[in-house]
Image (cartoon, rainbow, N blue to C red):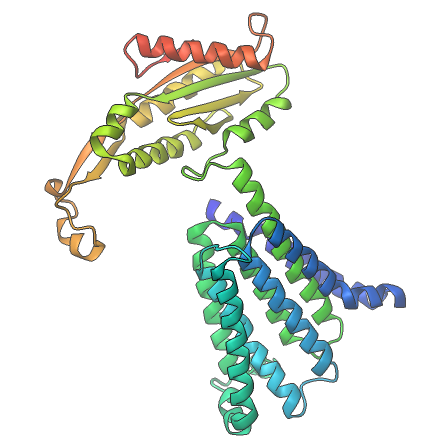
Length: 405
């Protein structure tokens, strides 16, 4: 369920676009003219944000969207009849889904970097290649591009030919898998924008659909840029949980009743020196994951290094202690497997050793927790944080792996 939440924003915007379709016909002439240029305006806005936040993949996607909408306005307003409109339409159906899927597969390399320029050059080469092939062989290729693969009456009503529809759906499926695995806003935005563009292509002869859904596609990508930038600022890269900056923001509006717990991984430096930084990162990820499941309304943050924080808004210490004790116990009971030096790093080579304790070592990790509550003794956030930090040191001095107030 949690993994599907990444699709919420694109789905809401696509649903909203469908609801707006009947209302477009009621718009005044001035508003309809604004709708015609809305895809350009929204895409350019997103491109400027992409440059500001150094996001090359959404920049490229929005550039492709602008080109696609320009080609629609130039060739497809009268429908998909004649060789030139057909060629433009089929070329867009070939190139847009392929490049959106390619952008989803790529890692972020910036807008004006060497990789960014190479990406734009590769797209230009694709466009030139398709133009040359279509110019000299389009009539020969047309029967293969538009052939009927299966006899299903609903598909016969679609403008998108079945071979290109199947190819587009394959790219969509690939992007769905990538989005679920990475849980990243940019991947989700690219997927939602491609869905909006495919809807626009499927209804290209209906004048209201292309501008409305191209605008929706641009807005989806633009929002994904903002969401990604927010995550960069307020989420910890390693563990994926909210960062110290997010904690500071949360403390501004926490109210006058709350509990702060400071958590520290016991003997983390020694553990890091013994097993290596990669294993240390695994420990931090595991601790963060266990903290995310804290009950009682607590919210976990990475404070820095091996230190974490859990904030209980509207709670007293007595309310928070059982939930913190549960987190401490869950982490203590977890066994972390460490790959031995002679264990093959290739997953296929290591399959035979899986389940064999000789191929890995199991270690346990413990944490110490210090807790403080806002109240008469600690009348400010800084004082509560300081008190929780002192309680954490008490927990360590008493032998670690315990909760102290």
